[in-house]
Image 1 (cartoon, helix red, strand yellow):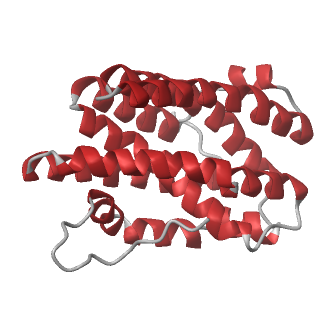
Image 2: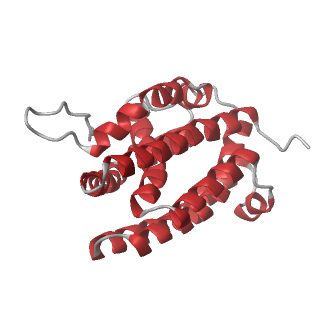
Length: 233
């Protein structure tokens, strides 16, 4: 189900989510054009690059789950607390289940993936996430974790219509294009709208900056997998 960016109606305030997405339009366009993403669709992405992605994503999701747990602790309402706590548990489940399946099909195990070093981009991204959720406001933390929800949903949605000749990549696309995941993302975007509506212009501007920064890290994460990034020294 599409999550359209609706134009503002006369006399209504612009949703905060529209402000956020407008700020990353160029980043999202660059993500869709990246050879890692186009290679998923046409099946030309080398399995070594996808394996690098899976390994680093396993590392990433452990810290992302911690970031979501902090968001749960600071969430404004009981329903939001439960939802973020569930998302944190879901991030761990994704690591244990889907990534184990991918590693098995790529030649390896979840234990082998866990033993591989955390890459530079992964370390930078998760460090920024954790610093923001711990050190900033709830809105700051929400804006920082939101791109991992929202961009994956939009990419999955865009790629679902094209699919992939590679069954491994098709499985990945279907996971993030699935309506169940899209519904989760709509819930988090709606929370961003509610929280942003109550914030000051200065607080919203700070949150936009966090959102743009972690959106850039999303592009960098796929690029790191494409390059099979390692520590230079």
